[in-house]
Amino acid sequence: MDEHWTVHKFGGSVLRGAPDLDRLADRVSESAGRNALVVSALWGTTDRLLRAVDDPAYADRLVADLRAHHLMFAPRLATGRDSERFERVLSSMGHALEARRANPTDQRARTQLLATGERLSALVVAHHLRRCGFDAHAVGAEDIGLVLKGRGEAEAVDLPASESSFDRNALHGTPVITGWLGSGEDGALALLGRGGSDHTATAIAHLLRAHRVILWKDVEGIHLINPRWGLTTAPIRYMTYEHAQMAAAIDATVLHPATVGPCITEGIPIEVRRLHEDTRGPAGTIIGPGVHADQGPMAASCTLDVMTMQVTHPPSITPGASTANVLSRLASKGIGVHASTQWPDGARLIIDAPRLEEAAEVIRAAGSSIVDVGEASALITVLGSWAAPEEAAALLGSATGSEPVDAEALRLRFLVPRANVRDALGRLIASASWTVDVT
Image 1: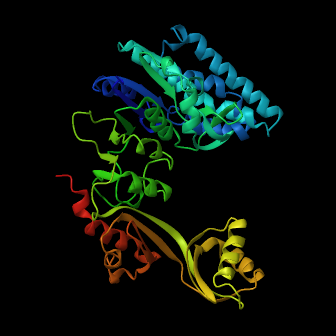
Image 2 (image 1 turned 135 degrees about the vertical axis):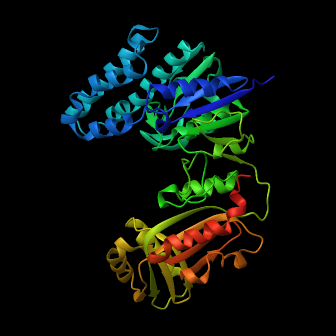
């Protein structure tokens, strides 16, 4: 019979000081069954390591500083059961710094250096949990068979390869697993992108066939609008896997883009909770299978500084071939096109405003002409589900000066004058208030 596992992920945003370790232990103690933890580096550590990668002068005192910083969280770590491992990780950090100083292009040294943040964090958390009565032990993700897609830097966990190499027996007691890390395709250490510890947690959950994943954050859940806009919204209580994937891809949520995928086939729910709230109440947000066909707006993002360009093409035998040529040339220059509408002899493109002049040169070099350039605008992307997306496209209201770009069953996009962005987002919140009601 499969064990009843819960995978907890604790990120750097909730590992800011020693009291956070007590809250972490409380959250684990409230969770029935077997528990596995995935941890990021302590708050600020990865940023310091990234700076040291390219600034040798800054790196001179880094080993001593990080040693002292981690001992503030766990004062007895240097003399406890993991003292030798603690010193080995610090020593490996020093060797990686020396290798990087000798050869600034040494990517393996860079990877080893950045990985020390998670290794130290796992030792600190395991040490504290043992003091709280747990049989906890720190585990390297690469040591239990987690394989990543890529070398050095990877975009995602390779689940089939990880299934073959996963050492479930190494996870005795309460394992504390390093997030962000794994073995690359060449067998050497590799890293996921920033925020990749969420993805590590869901991959571990998939491999363990876990009952649930809890992502512990410093916010209570996923919100309709990113809090940076200063607009107050309640958390979205339920999101489908598909919507959560789309929202992460457009940077509308607190999730790494690859987070959701490993949980879909096993139907494992993902809970987003705030560390300061215990598990007896409902999760801020739960991500799981689809349950509604017409539930309105679920999440939104806003990309500032975009512009429209009206383009005409020379005569072409194949309709759309000229537009495809232009899009390919723009992509080769790294100029993103957010949306395009084409017709036989032309197209309208929505591009990043700061790349306007570059884009114009590329378009003219392709033999096409620019006939009109729009005003600087914002592109608002709204995710949700609508039985009649064409009707839902009016939800921002004409008073904002919004212009629908496209309307699909799961996504709506609008161009909005920059001066009207907050008004448009406010209208969106009002129209979606029923979907985020906390009562």
